[in-house]
Image (cartoon, rainbow, N blue to C red; front, side):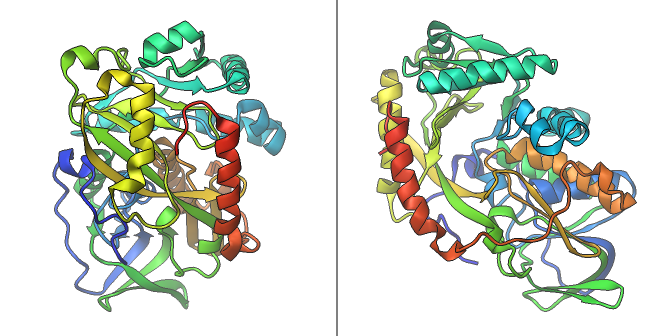
Length: 431
């Protein structure tokens, strides 16, 4: 696998806690459970299995958190892309409410783990603001406040003036505040999940990419690039936006889009007080959304979509730097110190997918940019399913692997869709 963003280290890689001590798999192993993928979902599954006394083996192609788990914006946003009424109408009263409970508490899972295990993860939980970029966006904010309030969330609608005060930019017409959200140093969080899982008995092997997976009699044979085997009763596959051809058809069930980010140098105290002064994180209602926050050392981060191809130079982040200059003119003279990105796994229905194409081969894929909380909570559910075999513990029903039709042409079509979305979004342009 080629490193997709080799230009410079991310901010998170520069400021993260040291990784847990791991090694490459150098021998054949027997295990009850083998987990493929050392991101949030895989590590959370391993941790929750270890809490129950099951010492799973985790195989990671690079380092824990190397993929999107260590490259995202670190925003811990509860819920899904679907609003509460949509979840209930889609899944029915009983299953919809179960899913709603799951989605509503995904952020809690993250902050509870950090507290329970005293993880060395810089974090702040002051809420998430979804800023409305248009009148349609403001109506969406009103709808979400109404719906989540019915389910016990102390959600607040923000006026234009309140939004400007809380964000430090006058670019938005209003928004809403979800108090359940927050922000973490995402790579530190992934590394600490690994450290805790190991301390509880999980065995994690890095630099050990899996090249084949087959069922032999009553066990799975998982083979790494170095030729070593893990023979396990069950396999949990959690590779998300970095999914390859290990399971036929799986890669074609997602579109792995690039999400790019830039970060400034630490802001001076007087400037820092003018941007997100109450400690919230934020993303907006654009179809091609912008997301932004301050990190724990006072840098401003801005993220958004990048080109589908891999980056070729700093110019591929120029659209985000222009956005920062328009939205926050008070930092126009502060240079950008970091540029990086990662892949977000999008499914056709914008929901996570769970598969079990063969008995004992469980697959979790699709996070839609909400992976910090979603995949932490999903890992807890996957661990319960592995332990009990009870499908009712899963937040989503198991479904067959159905590749997206004409998948090879999706990027071409998405290019046209993105151009249309940019036109619809208006306001602060990303290009």
